[in-house]
Length: 322
Image 1 (cartoon, rainbow, N blue to C red):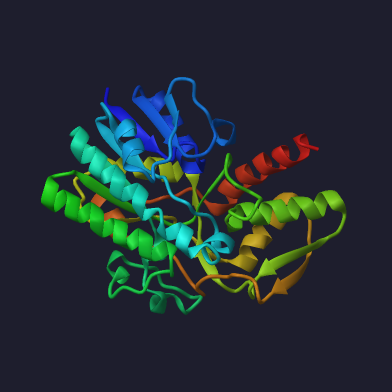
Image 2 (cartoon, rainbow, N blue to C red):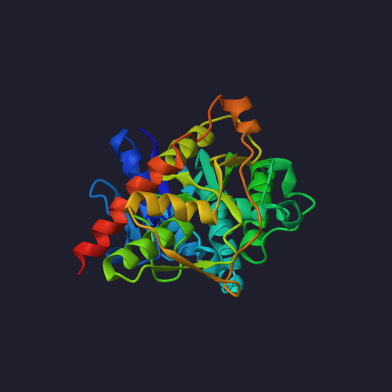
């Protein structure tokens, strides 16, 4: 079987992907900057390395003997992080650039880059009733400041390494991935996990209040991790050269997301809206027309089903640590 590098494999998505690849007979090397006791999942069957992939030497070490590279590594988090750490987010350009160089030097067959819906033009995301962002909506460019610019630049870098050097690159634009074994506190968590944590805290404390960032009317779509892993593999082994949306088309408002978590928890909370908190764009959803046309597939796990599993995992984590 192919020998696959999962860069950022100590993170949320990477941990799930590495597990899936191992279960399907792949040889897997995992590289991540975090100390191993901070990895979300550790798989004994993988060749695990703590490496700072910002540096070219570390990337050469990670890619040595590797057939295929999957780059999920980045300094990122939810809106509360990326709006206040723009320079740190942009420095992730070093990771993708150096991994592309190392993959080229190693003669790797394929290279996957995890991009983001944050590449899309902000003027297309002013209406909460967003009809869905098409792949073409990334240009003319006006992405999320910092993080979105890094992602869009790195997409172009992948394209030119393919055109100039023959590196067989594939790109997916992730839309808000969530699920078990992910961040739910500390400032880097995204909305689904944050809402689960806040509802659980209210339920356990008896203080039935919840703070919501913004007005709660801002809209998003959220993709469960199993759909994400399946989509990565489908896109990676496809013949599709241009970036593709990888996200659910089930759009909800943040208020509706809270409704779902309250229903799962069997509780109703008093909502306080923090209008000064980071809230991102007003409306964002994944238009899946192209992935349906090219692959006959799109992410399909419902938000209720995915959030039920996520809530249970976070609840168990929070209660077992007390």
